[in-house]
Image (cartoon, rainbow, N blue to C red; front, top):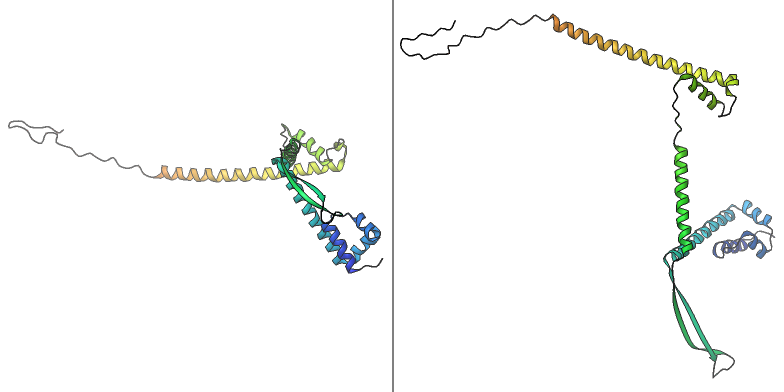
Length: 238
């Protein structure tokens, strides 16, 4: 069957509005699945329209599912109509409506739907906790360098046993440890130099303070404690 724009439009409409599967569409238009996918591949505009119709169909289905779930969780009002027909007096071959009875019934929330939502939320929390634990790095504290070296060899060997027998893994670990040791030695050396400079500055400041001459003592002026004396009395200030 040859590709036709009219047929393509009908296929898109069936996918989008009637929620038809690819197999149902192929059966309706009497084409094979191979032909459908060849059209989709050779006609880019048709392929894009099919994908957009599928996306729209999925959105509609999800929205409908959410509305239905909301009704099950909150409860809903169900309406039921009962219509009675009788033969038409003027035309006995046809029936006419005699009366219409509308019954309304409240359907309570579904325990099963509520349990489904709660279980789904609990699974989501468990998944989030698992992802958080996987993102958190594993920290192992060791007491000596040899234990740390063996752990590094185990990690370098993909956490498989026998890493200490692999010369390449051992050499790579020893090289890394030697580089870390060298870096640490340089850091200690720099800290020692900085401490030495600080000590020199402190010593120079102390030498300057000691080199300054001592201040001469200041004599206190003699104060007459008795400026006013009665006649016949004298005061001594020595």
